[in-house]
Image (cartoon, rainbow, N blue to C red; front, side):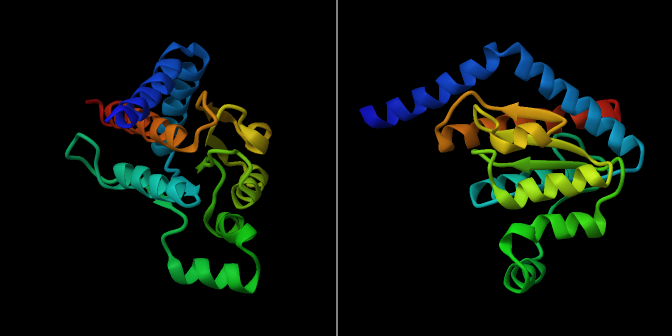
Length: 191
């Protein structure tokens, strides 16, 4: 029982650190404004991640394309790993490192937003995707851990959760992602 309490407290501690980090909260607010502007301009939001971060990417994309709180029209958002035939073909024929960058080359447009989730900030396939996104005039948002890793230099907006503990980082990623989805939905649809 004590170990369970320690884990819950560790999660709370990271969220308390997020709550006290005004710069991070301002970044989250800036991301909301960027995404609302992108949607209003006819652009889309694309997500990428690996493992648990891929699951979180898919979850957050679904909050936009499905709904969050409001019964409303779908918003154009997609997680890039959901086409398993594409993913396995490109990983096999080229490299796992290019699965996302190749997709961005094909469907990314100027003004779109690419959101990459990587607790280390050093996932090669996400770094490559951010580089291609920059070339195409897309905006980039990275959800990372404390240091931001290599994605820090490639991000227009860095949401770096103040922790180096992967599960605690991911818990805060989904919380912050939910906040963004809720506020984007409210602003875009005027709720």
